[in-house]
Length: 454
Ligand SMILES: C[S@@+](CC[C@H](N)C(=O)[O-])C[C@H]1O[C@@H](n2cnc3c(N)ncnc32)[C@H](O)[C@@H]1O
Image 1: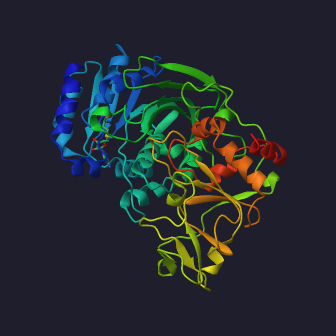
Image 2 (image 1 turned 180 degrees about the horizontal axis):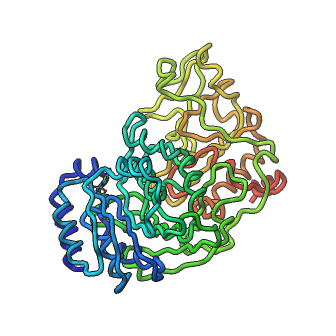
Image 3 (image 1 turned 90 degrees about the vertical axis):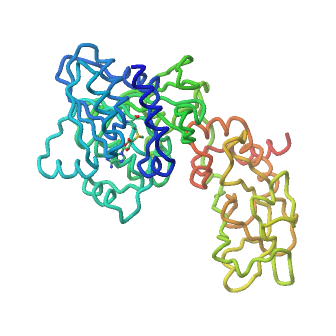
């Protein structure tokens, strides 16, 4: 096994960044591969293993090791000719593996095979699929749509192709970016996936870049274990700080704490590692408070000609996230405009001057909190209207301002530790969208007013 780790490091060193990005090549460290392999249950049925995008074969090797003396037939797909010889060497060294190396495009080969003979043969899948965007007109995208899935990322396409070829009750273990769990672009994939597999295990890494420290991949990864056609039961959620798995701990959660029943987005929540289990927010919906939240209506590049660096006659304040950094400051010197003209083209994108609560849609991953809220007091700014730029979320009541005491309480609530902890249970990325904020539970108006006075 030490040979494989050396082979892996060698294979990746030899390739340029662009080549690796083109094929989505991030290789699994041995500790991670072994952990993944340890998640399989082995019984004595013949093993038909699939390793799609096999690289130099680290995952098949770890699987073979975990399977002990059991005989395995492995199908290892690898499109890149650079790895063929290392892959073959790895496979030759595995006494219990009879392998077929397929130097083919896995997506194309899957769709062709399923069209010709619909047999789903794999009993086990171990995968670290390539991570790469695929364009609307790409062949991969068109092919995978034949499996009933529209997706914009190759890793989702790979998972779908692997699952489509899996036998009933096949076990599938994959390491993938966490983005599919709540990203808006992966909604169709979540439906596709959860219709076909039971989620059995989710493993998280506490720190973003540790699963592939030597590849400096900043994607947040998760390891999933799924059972094809399985009945959904409880889910084991585990976490570790890094790929040594030294501090591994796990808990078992009912599936409806992972995917909220009735959630049309099918977001997959994963409680933050080491967070107390009772992480839920109490309260009602925003709608019950007669409050809503929208994305800042002004998309600045569409209205560029109406923006001004300083307020002039006939203009009103234009607010960007930068105006709230370190407390409201308007006008502010810098690259961002401070004002927008009021005219027929801009009027419908402006909101009446008033008291609003705003949050930034994007925070950096180093920031302590994901949701950072500010109150914009009524009349803090001149003019009858305000322009809120698209990188802000704005809490409002019927597109008008909020009572100041409610806004202050709402701001305090959004900035609380409880909200931040809860938010992290379902969001792996640093983006906070209006839909995310709408999904939170909120205290009543009187509770918010009380919070305003604390
Ligand atoms: C993320 S790497 C993982 C490699 C290996 N499984 C591991 O865990 O170390 C993905 C691999 O998929 C291969 N790949 C990319 N696109 C492919 C395709 N369409 N068909 C087959 N292999 C592909 C890449 O060359 C790369 O080796």
